[in-house]
Image 1 (cartoon, rainbow, N blue to C red):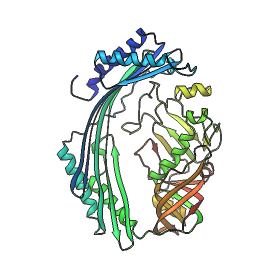
Image 2: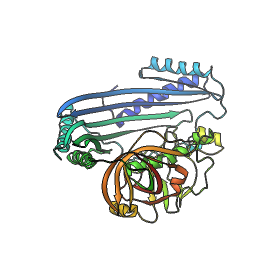
Image 3: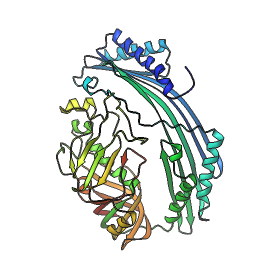
Length: 448
C-alpha cells in the first residue's frame, strides 16, 4: 500500500472491506459489516524545558462482524493482506456459529443507510517534524512558566496531531469512507506559595492547525489559572447555587445524554427511564444535535453503522424529544435508530432566553460556588444521585472572593436539571457536547 494517509487511500480500503464482505457471504453469513482504517499520529511532551516523550503512531485495522440469522461473531486484524482477511472472516464466522441467536441483532435497516456523503471539511493535516513539535510545546510551557515566579513546576506541555482515513461497508451494499484529522496542545502547571501548591491546566483543540488558539496564550492561561488557585480554602458545609464553568458543564449535561442512551433505557438502568416527552429542564433550554457542522470535532456524515446523521432536537423547550439510539437499542425499544451508533454528534446546548456573558453569569450567581475542576466518579446513573469533589472559587456579590478546594457537590441530577437558571455564551467547542457555563440553583456543598 502507498504511504499517504488521506482520501487517496479510500479505494484501497474499500477493496479490503469489499473482499471481507464477499468472504462472509461465501461462508453463509446472512449479514455482515466491516470497517477498515489507517491512522497516523505524533505526540510530544516537553516538561521543564526538556523532552519527556515522543510517540509516533501508525496503525491500520480491519474489523468484521457477521450475523447468521441473529447469531453474531466479530474478529479484527491489523494485517490487510488477502490471506489474513480470509482468516479473520473465518474466525468471525466460527464465533458466530457458537453464539446464541439474538432476534434484535443485525445491521441497521437498508432504508436508514446514508445515501449522500457530504464533505464536512474534516481533513486538515499538520505536517510537523518531531523537532517542530518539540519547539512548539517548549514555547507553550515557557510562556506559562514565565507568568509568575510562584510557578515552580510543570507536568508538561503536550502537542498531539492525528490524521486518519476510514471506510465502512455492509452487506446492504453501503460502502463509504472519509479522511479526518485533529490536533491539540495542552499545558499543566503547578504554582506554590507559603500556603501550599496548586495545579491547573489549559488546552486547545481543532480540526485545523491554523484554528488552534495561540500556543503561548494556552501556556499563559494555564499559568494564570494555577496562580489564581493559590491560597485556596475549604468551605463549611452549606447550600448555595453553583456555577459550572463551560468545560465542567459539558460533563454535567453529558450525564443526561448517558441516561437517555438506548442501552440505559432497554436495560432499565437510567434515572431518566421512559422520560421521552417529560419536562426535564426549564423551558428556555434547547439541545440540538447538528452532525454536519463543518470542521467540528464531533461531525460525521454517517454513524458507526452507516446510518445517515441528521439534525434533530433532543430537548425542545426543556422537554425530552426522544432517545439516543443505534439500531440494536432501537429494535429492543420498538423504535427507530437516531443515527447515534458510536455516540452523539455536536449536541448544542442553548438558551432561548439568551446566553449571558461570564460577568453576567457571576452576577446571576450572586453568592455561591464557581466550579472550575471536578474530581471523582460519584454519579449513580440509575438513581441520578450526584456527589463529586470540586474546586474553584467562592463568589460574593457577583465577584470572585477567593479560591476554594476540597469540597463536594451533592444533589440529584433530575432536580439539578430542573434547577438550571442560566447558560453562558462562553461555549466550549472541544467535545461532542457544546455548551457554555451553566448556573444551577441551591446544591449541597459539603466541606470542612
